Each structure stands twice: as C-alpha cells, then as structure tokens.
Image 1 (cartoon, rainbow, N blue to C red):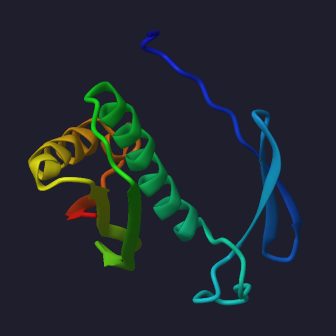
Image 2 (cartoon, one colour):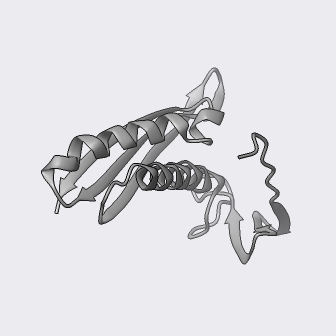
Length: 145
C-alpha cells in the first residue's frame, strides 16, 4: 500500500448560505449550508458540523470493517451515534470533544473481547481521528445476538 493518498472535493456556492459538495469519485452531491443554530442558518441541510461528525464516524466504520475482515470477526451489525457540542475555547468556537457511541453485534459471547480489541485497533488507526485536534471518546458496546 502506498503511504500517500490524495483526495479532492469541489464546493460550489449556490447562493445565500448554501453550497453543493461533489467529489470526482461519485456522481452524487451533498447540499451543505450554515447550520440552523447560526445567524441565517438553514433548517434541514447538512452543516459543516454534521459533516465533521459524519467523517469521524464513517472513517471509524471503514477502519473497523477492514480490521474485522483481516481478523475474521463475524458480526451482524455496526452502528455509531456521534455527539458533539460546539463551545467557545480560547475565545474561538470549536468542537473540543466528541463522544461516539459505537455498537457491534456478534453471534457469540466468545467473540465479545475480540470485537472490543478490534474497536480499539480501529480507533487507533482511523485516519481522520488521527488528523484532528478534537478529543474523541469511543463508548463501545458489543451485543450478543
């Protein structure tokens, strides 16, 4: 595997406080806007803050999937719920902490510890988590189903 990877995203301003994100790898686009919590924010659109959490959780998931596959972990479900609060830190608004509630379903109690180890490895090797200054707290739960 090459050590360097490049990614490109294009953003086109659509007027007011909205824009459209595209990436050459997909024909789909995402409408983004100022969050409704902010002045002139737009209700119902993905905000940069939502995209930030989506990036953290999707990177954690894809890392987990790779590690689980390499470890032959059998599981039937994977879910994340990310919670962040933007607050003033050193007179700047930022997301200092994120809590990610992660749930994995495994078929046997014998694989619970293995799943927890894979979650820990995934957390350590997540490219996005390793690239941000936000403190990320993973609250894992492994359910036997």
